[in-house]
Image: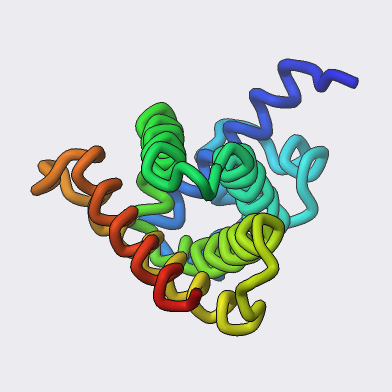
Length: 189
């Protein structure tokens, strides 16, 4: 079932307005009126799509989870370098294509909640992928190692992406991350 383009356009305007507002004020202080005004819609139109601002945040989080899942689903543990590189290329492309999303993820204090859930999602997906390939790893030790790795990767990527003139290219960044990833996985094995 396809969704009407007007519905998609309105929902995008609402989520974009919300993300922009989080750069200006605390998320808990953002009202439906604030969002509607920024999205250039009326409150009744807002309520056709969302119950409240929290539901908008949930929608943004679901979209991010879907993007991450799509990027990570192509990850191949037998080719960590190329998989990591392709995943970061895709994520960087998505951030660059959507300025409001990029600013929200990189500069809003409200994105911390989403970053925590993103790390959990990536940890679960990576653990599943690694354990599916081999049963020689201790699952709990691997969860700790992967959680450590994912947190470092996500935080380092955000730091790298925030830099207007990164000190290293995406390829160099991926090479560093790959070496560290292989070292952590190797230490557990």
